[in-house]
Length: 102
Image (cartoon, rainbow, N blue to C red; front, top):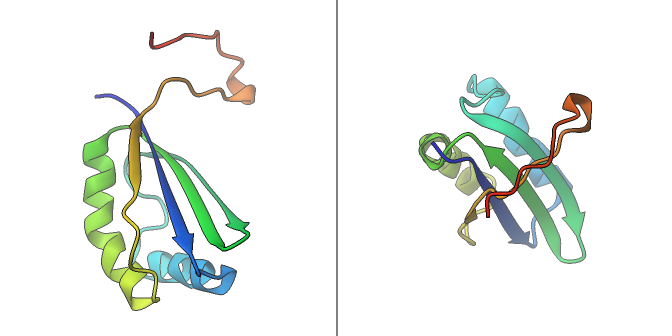
């Protein structure tokens, strides 16, 4: 399986909406999605940005089937995620050697 990076650009989304999605995920028992390696989110000048790293596209798609209704419930439907093959991931705590996918 090839790791992937996924990002969502969500114009018009607030921090409150993002936080509510997390509360809904936790309430549904999905605080630790299978295959999710890293998750980061930040406000942008016009909304919200989420960047994930997943063990595989299959893991992300499985999570997406559960996530999409929660996003919709919280008024966050719209832009599709961008899915990219992961070229490199660096975790300072693990002190890995650099390895290029090229």
